[in-house]
Image (cartoon, rainbow, N blue to C red):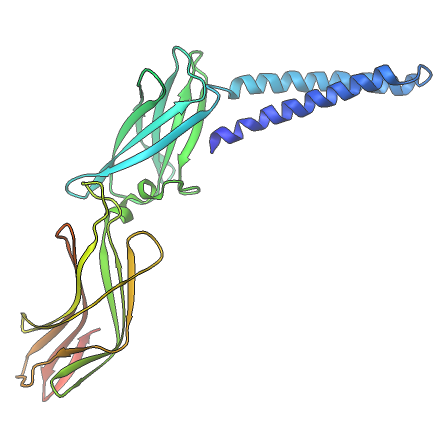
Length: 298
């Protein structure tokens, strides 16, 4: 956090003061006949005083509001899923009359939004930025004291995504499912899935503020555009919020016993979410011709 960095000059100042005190003690405790050494210590004492003075000046310039004592970011998705409102709340360590704050957001190193903050009258500066769906946002709070001195605090960035949802806004808004069909067999009116890899990612950010759940997951076989058979699935949680996976090694779906020239069969991986959203991915597609099947997708 940026406020931690502002502590470094304080530590340096303390160290310098201790060194100064040690030098003074050394001067007064040395025997009078060590004149050369005492003179060297006096010079060291003068140098340390200059360092302390410089550190004091630097500390004064950095200590705008004494950092942030608390802050957070809250993202709320738009109804159309094309972006989100991101609200910052930030409490300065020491508020003073005339203090201001700016909520700054950058994308690919360029500032895309700069929103003046409102003071709630007691503890927090607040501001809301409207951001289109994209990955790679970085969020900053800039505190400006009554004298116009500025101090910038990195809240959540691509380098340090304390809150990763607003940083990776597009990925958090989107959801998908994916099927890789490795091997299969058609025999005696059955399509056997010998091996398939399935994965899904649910939206982490929604307009209603909650992540949906999976109501139904299945493989669906479609014959010439009509649902023909299905196989229910139970997905397993994967690493990361809203992530699921399944390695399917064995599973049967009914297959048409009689096919005609030009018949088409499609195998979909389909998920229905609790908010009604349907995710679908085409895992395999077959075309019947010349008395045999050709896998054209998968």
